[in-house]
Image (cartoon, rainbow, N blue to C red; front, side, top):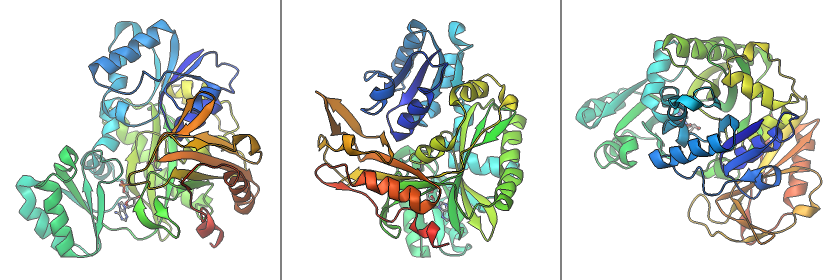
Length: 431
Ligand code: AMP
Ligand code: GLY
C-alpha cells in the first residue's frame, strides 16, 4: 500500500520510521519531510507547505497520481484548515483512508472555547472557566476578580503554543485580558479569551486513537515544555519526553479512561462529529484525579518519539483500522521498556536562532534512535533547519538506563551552538 504522511517534524519522522517497518508498506511519502524522513521514505519538499485551496488541490492531485491509500496528517494546521473534509468531498477520493479528523473535530484544538463547551456539555472534568470577547471585556474583568489567583488566560485560537498566560495578580491579568481582546495580542486567535481556574498538580499526556466509535489508548507520556533546567525559562514545543509515566498507575489510568476518554468519544458521537484520528489529552493530576487541560487533535511532539517506539504491533493496520472504523478488532501490544527522548535545539530557541549549521556524529550513535525534526539534507550533509533539531530516543528497563542510552548518543552529536536539557526525567526518578 502507498502512504502519505503530512508534516516535517520529529513526530512525522517517528511515524514514518515505524510505518516503514510494516510488511504492508510499499511506497511511503512524507510532505514536506526532513533529512530524517528521507532515510525511511520519499520526501516531497514542495508539498504540504500550505493548506489554502491551491495547497489542498496539490495534495489531492498527488494522492490520485500516486495511488495513495492512506493519508496520515501529522500536525494540527492542515486539520484545522479542513484537509480531511476537502479530500472526502471529492468523488474519486471519498474512500481514501485518512487519519485525522475533519474541521468539526479539529475545533477541539482550534478553539479553546469550543473545547471547554464540549467538556462542560459532556461532563468531562476540567478547570472551571468562562469565555469573553471585546464586547464583554468589563464582565471579563469582574469575572477575573471573582476567581482565586493565579488565574489562567487562554487565547481561543491557535497561537503556536504561546497563547496561554498564567497571571499571579489581578492587575497583570486585567492588563493581559485587555491586550488580548482589545490590542489583539495574538491576532485573531485572541478575539475570544477563555479565563480559567489554575489547576495545581503534575502534568502528563494520554494519547487515544479512535475510529469515532471504538478507541485504543496508547502509552502515556510526560513532556518537558520549558527551555531551562528545573523547568525554568520560556515555553517551547517540548524539550524531552518520558513514557511510561511512573505516577500514572493503573488506578489513575482507569480514572482517565472512565471519566475522560469514554465521555470524549461518546460526546463526539452524540455531537455527530465523525472523528477518526489521534486525540492528545493534556491532563493535570490533581491529588490523584485527572482534569483535562487541553485537547490536541494530533500526536504530541516529542511525545510521539517515546510513544511509538513502545508499540510492538505493526502500526500500519492499526492506523488503517482507525480510518476505516475497524478499531474494535485491534489489540495493542506494548513494550514494558521505558523510553526517553532528549530534544537537541538550536542556540537561541525558542527565540531567534541560526539555521544551516552542519551536524556531525550520526555514525557514532549506537545506543539510541535519532529522530530528526528541523533538519535538511544538502550535498550528503545534514544541516540544522529549525529550532528543535533532533530528538534522541533511548530505551531501557529503567528510566536511568533509558536516559543513559539517550544521553550517550546526544553527546556524540555536534553542531555549532547546540543546546539540550540535561535533566530530562530527573523529577520522575525522584518520585
Ligand atoms: P495549553 O496550551 O492549554 O496546553 O497550556 C499550556 C500550558 O499552560 C499547559 O501545558 C500547562 O502547563 C499550563 N496550563 C494551562 N491551563 C492550565 C490550568 N488551568 N492550570 C494550570 N496550568 C495550566
Ligand atoms: N509537546 C507538546 C505538543 O506536541 O503539543
